[in-house]
Image 1 (spheres, rainbow, N blue to C red):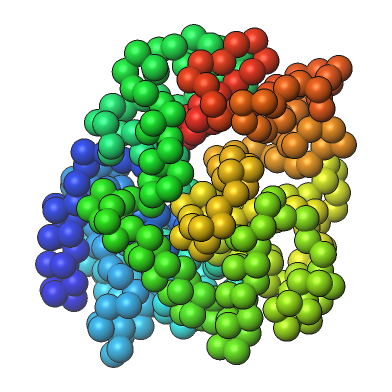
Image 2: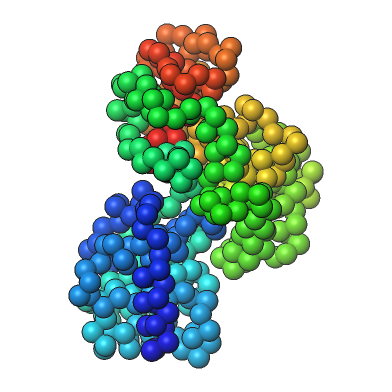
Amino acid sequence: MKTLYIKSKTKIERVSIEFTRYLLDIIHPKNRISIIKGARGVGKTTLLLQYARLKIATEKSILYVSLDDLYFLNHSLYSLAEDFYKDNGSFLLLDEVHKYPNWSRELKLIYDDFPNLQLVVTSSSLLEIYKSESDLSRRAITYQLKELSFREFLFFEKKINFPPYTLEYFIKNHEAISYEITKKIKPLHEFNKYVEYGMYPYFIEEKEMYTEILLQTINLTLEIDLPAVERVDFEHIIKIKKLLFAISTSTPFTPNITKLSERTGISRNALIKALHYLQKARLLNLVNKNNKGISILSKPDKIYINNPNLQYAFASTHSNMGSIRESFFVNQLQGIYKIELPPKGDFIVDDKYTFEIGGKNKSKYQIKGIPNSFVVRDDFENGVNNYIPLWLFGFLY
């Protein structure tokens, strides 16, 4: 235990607090169990250490532990929590909990047996607490840490801390907001960099090797996280990689399940399940028609690579600008707002706002007469009336 305390203290003291992710102020400090899910590389460990340093009173006893620590070769998670609790411990921060075999059962026991102990836990975005061995849904509050927004990227790249805006607020005020921002930066120039290499924090130190690192991260997600959480065998993983490439080299993808099954060698039901797994892994985004019911065996109406950085990494020579635009738009809104496919236009958000996405020639023709409809274009810095710059949707978090 002494070694764990030393490691914990050192990591918490050394973590940078120059910039914090949007989720830091959303996690409620009184939750008995908070679970932070997210894709590999989005900054979950940094967030956890920053939470310890900035959000927990100094007089409280804190212990940060990674669940892949060698300590757990001879000790259980429950025994660690028990010893920490007896030592007057207050906050137990558990990193990469999905790497511990009996995580759900022991977290439930810890919750039930040590009522004054608070847990903040990070895990793979694949983790499903509602389907775990011990149902934590009534005990744990789950948060999703998304990839860097364009606003967050600009802090790292330009050291300017712009505020985030709600969708409703910036729709009403987008002209004034964009003019204030363009006084300080050239958004189109920065946005072009962001969609290629700015959505994962490691771009700060590894721009030249960014794509290679991202591809390695994708491989680790597919070859380690997916089998560990969903028990997918290696042969199936190879086929899933083919599936990802097939989608990444297409324009915004309306799936033909039969043809996709033939191309990848995955049976129909297994293919649909794989698509849902890849969405949970934050490698894909699945979007359905407005008010359509969804289940694990539902065929999605449209498939997008989760974000433009993945699009460039998968198929840099085949990247389609239409895919890049829509991938970015969906990525920035999904998980914060409800986004679906309307009868007219590209997307409808929260059953209220309709958006048509495009380049310099895009007009309102497709959404003419639809209330609360907007054209989102990638070619201008400042919008006017119902024409909004695409880059501005990167300021939602």
